[in-house]
Image (cartoon, rainbow, N blue to C red):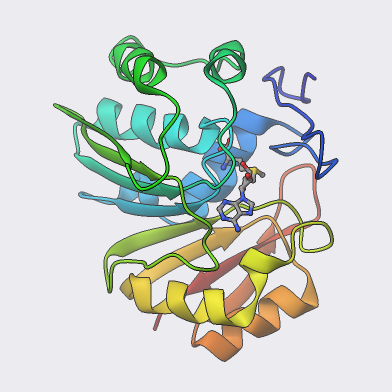
Length: 215
Ligand SMILES: C[S@@+](CC[C@H](N)C(=O)[O-])C[C@H]1O[C@@H](n2cnc3c(N)ncnc32)[C@H](O)[C@@H]1O
């Protein structure tokens, strides 16, 4: 289906939700995840993502870093990767330097269990781990930004639970950010209990998003 900014997303057959905001998949990747985590200003961003999905957030971060000439380190967790055909069908407006990186990812897709997909190049490094985040290990104090992007807590509650949020807190560098589209009270309380300073920020199309920071 087409979102309001013209970019595509898909509705998951089991979870029954879209992979990205209906207000604009590319918009959300840029305005929420990239900007609300200050990744667009960081000189060496280290992004940890929950839910690689259609790779829209990755492509937005890649394109921004390539244009700024800064290296990107991107670690994403995905327990149910879509097929290569599906991933190929969801296009976003990528710049000419980013296009070959995405094409290389497509040739290696999907990641296999216990065998992360790793891509490296002039632009930086991507690792996609085919793991369930409720059982996954995260690198300590590694991330300058966490993109918390599972399906909603109503249909996909596991990744939003406090034990996962606490481990995400440990994975963030002091001063680092976490962003998510959910403003559910339970999510914000869980992030606070994990140690984050949490605030609601104005959303685009949607009333608000959540930005959290490790003090
Ligand atoms: C909203 S989509 C992510 C969209 C993606 N960030 C993008 O830019 O296209 C949510 C993703 O989280 C994944 N997911 C949900 N629960 C998970 C879990 N427990 N462990 C790993 N991945 C999970 C789903 O399979 C789905 O691909």
